[in-house]
Length: 73
Image 1 (cartoon, one colour):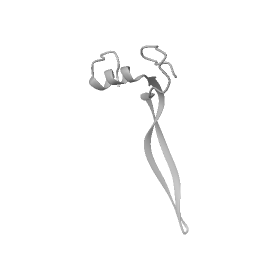
Image 2 (cartoon, one colour; image 1 turned 45 degrees about the horizontal axis):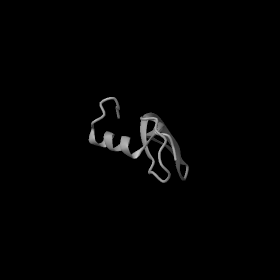
Image 3 (spheres, helix red, strand yellow; image 1 turned 135 degrees about the horizontal axis):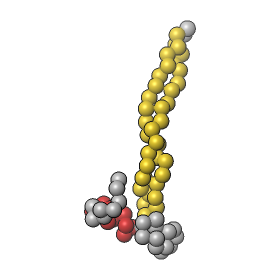
Image 4 (tube, one colour; image 1 turned 135 degrees about the vertical axis):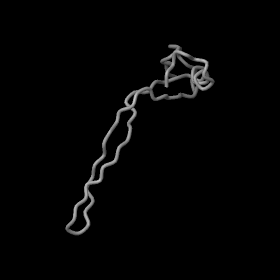
């Protein structure tokens, strides 16, 4: 059981939980690669989820169908 963060309804036991990411954070990953005496700095970029909401089955299906104008991905 959990509370849906969109409709504020407490769900039934064993109802599937859907987590939808709301905001992301840009991150930079750096590591050094050593080959003998040479060192090379490798940089890559990515995104981490910083906030996500819990949705019930009903609200999740509304978002998938695109009927909810208030929800922004």
